[in-house]
Image 1 (cartoon, rainbow, N blue to C red):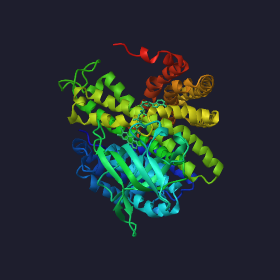
Image 2: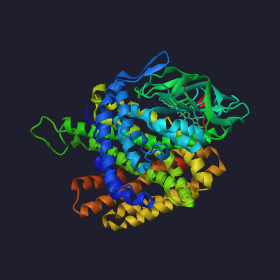
Image 3: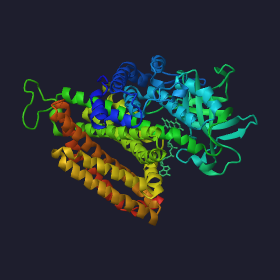
Image 4: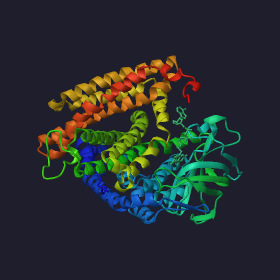
Length: 598
Ligand SMILES: Cc1cc2nc3c(=O)[nH]c(=O)nc-3n(C[C@H](O)[C@H](O)[C@H](O)COP(=O)(O)OP(=O)(O)OC[C@H]3O[C@@H](n4cnc5c(N)ncnc54)[C@H](O)[C@@H]3O)c2cc1C
């Protein structure tokens, strides 16, 4: 099994040479964050992920979590690693300073979150949901809730969850049945069953703070009648510490194909005491603060697993000896050549590299928009950043999680039969990655969100603004003459994407089924066009560094991966375009009875 090495060179190249993070942060008024500080965070973060999280990944998968009479025990070492994460200040990285957070930009926290997710995704999930819950409470709760809960959550003493799903209500939250009743003293009593709750019960923190969606008796029907409640496992005592046990109990934990060290709990709320977060009946909108952050974080989780799988595949391809190269022996003193010599193995490895490193650019771009939305001084500019970010969020979540599945599956393929066997470790990445396309809103739902809410929602205004911005960026990369082909391909695709967006909007106006019928392919097409921009920018930065005589091997590898992306992966966009313009009828014509004959 290959030891995880954080992709520090790639991250530094991306943040410094491609995105000029230092300058971007100064534009956002964060000139207190120096390039040296960025470097220290990346290096310390890498060390932490490699030394504290990664060694627990495999044993965590082997041992899993155990449930006993409502209590959940995490695998050995998890408590100490969780504590070290909090003690070293990682849990407070991007939390608000008024509650003990460091208020660091997401563009800096994001790469760290990729590294810890790569090291141990199950363990990371106990922490990521707390960060999301902190954001939702900080944005929507009243001052007294913020004072009681946030500092402890930011410090990691108390952890958070997100309780949406019920047995009969997954995607369609309008159907949820958990009910809330006003207790008359400002608190509420929550009753119902939630399933699949990540970190719903565990032994890592003193208290668990559930953010629960429930319906008040007088709320409107459907999703508009949902409210959001904060329901602690232990009610705070008069000193603010964990006091009396609340009426919430973990009935069981799920046995899963992956993420076996992450506790996925079935929770019963039996008249549990809770407090409202945000206005009554507007809980879904408040929960979106948490969900949008979580969707971006799924992008980081996807990158982490994909990077791990890619690293394992490259090491194995260099070690495994099988057959001779088609053009004659490359290592004649060995009984066979390493499989790295075979074009098909290189196809798999370069697909992994181009998707992971291109995906990292996409995620970093989204993180800069998150920072811009939070930090820009001008309200209109913040609003513009928010609308651009809204277009990126479903693409980051869905494309990167589908990408992680492809990359982790390719890692198994590169290992041949040994990849299917547990010892090599790559099958765990694939099993763990499988959930990423499902949770935080399935990828099908993300695609519909992109088309319905983000594209049709404003008649394509933000979409046009995004394309114009990318066109300017592509034009500005014109310094490197040798990249002319990449640039003209990218500019051509931007024009085609713009026209395709119009076609999708017109088709949706004719027939609402077209929204669902075009969504998957439109999202993947959009992601590939974005990645073309990313690879153009990365190739331009690599060319600049080469001209300065720096990092020859690294820069040549970037240019090779860019060429591979444009020649062999970008053509996938044409297939997505053909599928989406083919219309809804080829999907909607068969009756339910015509799907299967046995
Ligand atoms: C390991 C794990 C951890 C989880 N953690 C949490 C958590 O912490 N908190 C939480 O609340 N939930 C959590 N979930 C639940 C997860 O978010 C849901 O499983 C997911 O939202 C899908 O809901 P569902 O499983 O009921 O599928 P369904 O909603 O029944 O969907 C089934 C299929 O139908 C499709 N579909 C449904 N509706 C539509 C539509 N309108 N248009 C197009 N396609 C549609 C879906 O895309 C999917 O392919 C977790 C689940 C798992 C397995």
